[in-house]
Image (cartoon, rainbow, N blue to C red):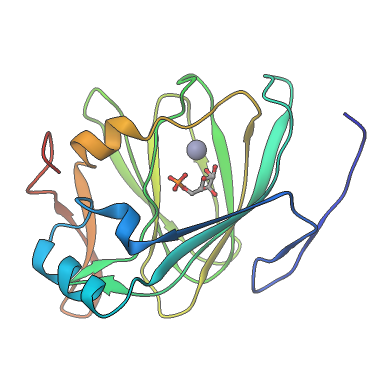
Length: 190
Ligand code: M6P
Ligand code: ZN
């Protein structure tokens, strides 16, 4: 690798230049939102863009640092806020760091052993995701949630565990405020 630089535009989260731009629409998250009827109703009216990731890829080696921005758009499926798919790292003993640049929300985390946490994102807040913790970003505000992230180049993404099992906790709007609740579908057929 040679040194390189990019510019992160605040507050939009645009990264210039970037080598990868991932867009995830609601249809790619079937089964992840608890209110299945609300999910289907929303899809019938279109397929909203839920979040985007801008990244400059690096070789997948432990000494490298993949980094970029994620932008979770505001919205809800029923009472559940727009969120990322969430993942464990494919190499599970790898950490990640997130820095909130704009918007507000939460990082929801859990381990295979049953521990969980919800760390709040407000501009300026840094959240550390330790090795072995699955993580998902949730936008609990009404503007884009913009995050900078960095993680080891070899970490990779294990999506399947979350697709099959879901997260133990969900972030929903209750009486006008973001609230952590149990996931009624946790453990299978999420
Ligand atoms: C962060 C990073 C990315 C990840 C993105 C979206 O920006 O961890 O590697 O791709 O979040 O999350 P997910 O991959 O779970 O959809
Ligand atoms: Zn990660």
